[in-house]
Image (tube, rainbow, N blue to C red):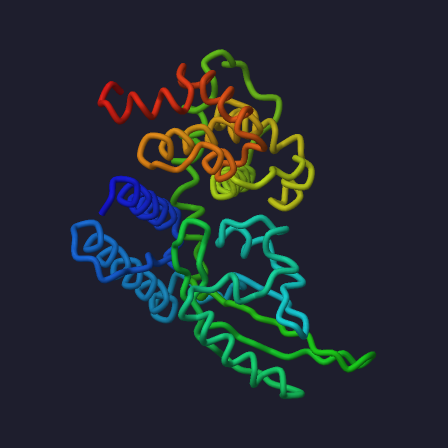
Length: 323
């Protein structure tokens, strides 16, 4: 496996571990037929996540301290052509996609290749029926290429006004009544926040960030990382999508990450560009486009300012072992 592919695979594994640490056990890593240590780790991690998820599912029926709750994890509303008309906020978070990159897109684009084939076949027959209510196992693909396998509840909704059909797809996550992730991590997150506040600002914050505020800001950070090639929506729209307001997004982001949202975006674009320049032979124009720069000259100026060398010189030094 090439160094770049190995690094990308390890980033997927790290992301899944962070989700598991936060109490989310519905992610899976897509496996392949490669036979190496990294692939073995991915398989073991999938097995571990599945076993933990199942243990919490069954605990809901036997534990006297908590009851089972059925929570809507993801929800999509499709039109008669299979285009997504609505997606809930949690779906955007789980799939690491901006709302604007889901709506008005074919639902099948959110699925793995195998599930896409299953959905396309089922969709042909569903469109011919006037009413249906069924369950279908489908696997979704996140921006980090993590797989989210789920059993989807699919219901047709017929309009009495014009006879058109809308399709509601709902994914329900079963959990115990106890807020496992939130209660367990609240103390650690509060401590983490205190450690990340800039040394230059030791005064008491004017705004108190709750656990939910911190979670939403981190979700915003994840969306930025997973959409580096896309234009960042204005902060008001981004805050609205995350379920907070622009002021808290700006303030909280600076407190957590020590910089503004825009500067963080540029910083992460350049970090990804550095990896592509160093470990691939892609031309610099393609790299600039992949990380969201509008033009190659703009990318070159920003890269040189950050890493002291132009992309060309940086690659030459990397190839010669000088870095």
